[in-house]
View 1 (cartoon, rainbow, N blue to C red):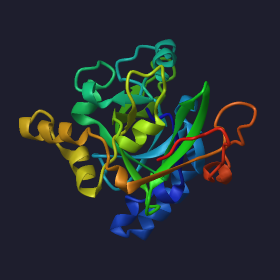
View 2 (view 1 turned 90 degrees about the vertical axis):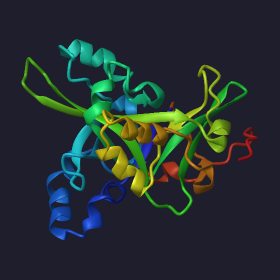
View 3 (view 1 turned 60 degrees about the vertical axis):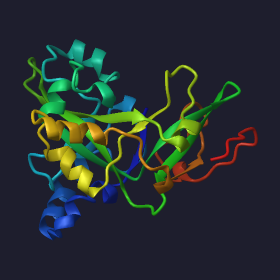
Length: 257
């Protein structure tokens, strides 16, 4: 799964910078960035942070969205709060059928750019967090789904998203070995060409639906690296600080990647 990420403003603006539109980038930095939870040196999806996402409506201008997708059909805040923690991730193999995600898969797919993500390795009754990132330190592009939900009581419109997951590659299978999970998982990661397909393909077209389905697969582990970091939970958690991704040595940990 993917419940913890690192996302800097620089990484989140990776896509916006491709057009080299300095005025647009400045506008994003001034009008959007102050209302996000960036920099997110470590943010948990269960805190529902506000991050920047890219949608097909304006592919190079991000919008602010809460992590944890709220389906448009949710009737009230009670149901929203009940569902919220279960929609941080969307299982890629079933997003076309699941009520919470199927409408978003049809027409509201998005991209989320991060510096990396965290996953826990379980050993001898303890959990050791790892930070996973691109070997070349470039931002990671994640496949997502998004939605707009209107609170009927206040009229407020909530924009939210979920990260799509798939089966783990070999490296992630070693790290994500939670005994309570049915299988090891990882987020769906995309290169530039695949990102365009994810945003713009029409799943009502059989060939394009097949192409979308093909993107829900393990990422090449040769492009990723990982190392253990300090605890992300409990009394020893250092918090949302830059040092959170620095390598940390656990004497008891014997995992070889």
